[in-house]
Length: 206
Image (cartoon, rainbow, N blue to C red; front, side, top):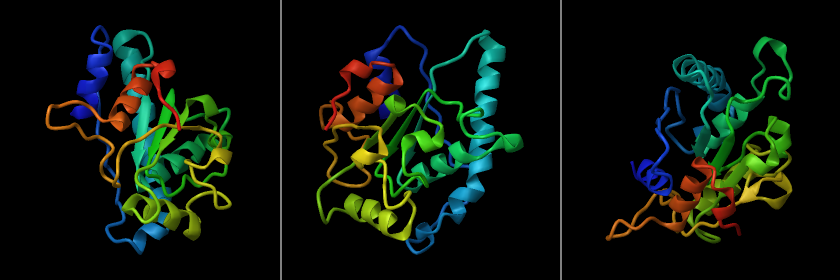
């Protein structure tokens, strides 16, 4: 809800909707989250959902919508596998993920060494992290790196991944969508909303 509210506040003249997709068997314990098998199994379902969403929008409006896919934690690994999922054996670049932008928050890895390996334009690949060394977010990211959820030890918040690393003021793994007691959005929340509405120049980077 906070993400929709901030996106709408930034661009009140646009029709904006947010969908929470969780239609897969997610790992429910840390040891299970060290394996890519859950993400690999989920990839076709996410890909079909995104394809269907785009087709439905085109049928209803006659045009396309600006679509941003956000993956938190292991959810970003699912997005990575969905981007690499080849329908009818097409290669990634001829059959790209039906999304204009991808945001990875607190990502342990996307099963790729570079954003381009996912068929993504690096200018439209975004990542953010929370807290410093020793934070719960740091353990997720570094844990994913060490167990191979990235590509050759590279995760989305690494410069060599090739995307944009957005500024974040979250100090914990679940704090990317916080507002304060006066309902003012965090930097993390504002940056995600700016990507959603296409205000790329307004995004603040590390």
